[in-house]
Length: 181
Image (cartoon, rainbow, N blue to C red):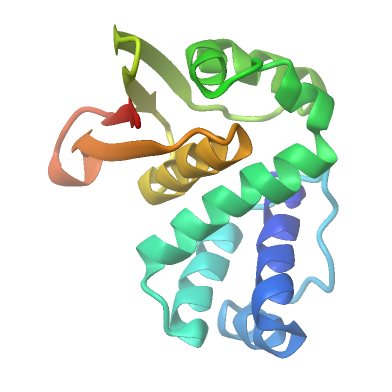
């Protein structure tokens, strides 16, 4: 993954749990880098080790760490660092989700070596969507859940999310059912 992902994990931890916890997480994860370069590619194992170590050091379930990171990614990283790119996704929550299949095409203009997930969006009703999530990476379902929650917050849209198909349970891909409340 690109270094900007690891930078965001660092930001999340320092902003919410302090520098000392970040140092403990890095040590537990055997991460020796003092900093991450946003445009440099790092092995995915570094990112996953940081997430697992954060769970252990902070005594928070890994699923909650990943969900929190997903929300942080949207609100802090996406909105603050890539505001114009985020705005290009749509003017409201529904538009952004419907445009999600094309969103990573724009991201690839910035990060050409990115391995983006794929999405298929089913609009069930005006207030209900099914988001099919395909990724070559394992273990990011809870992160994706947090991303969706973060988008709801960003667009000030109350939502309910259910995971109705889960790769971890043998399904081909994840499917999130999203209801606008």
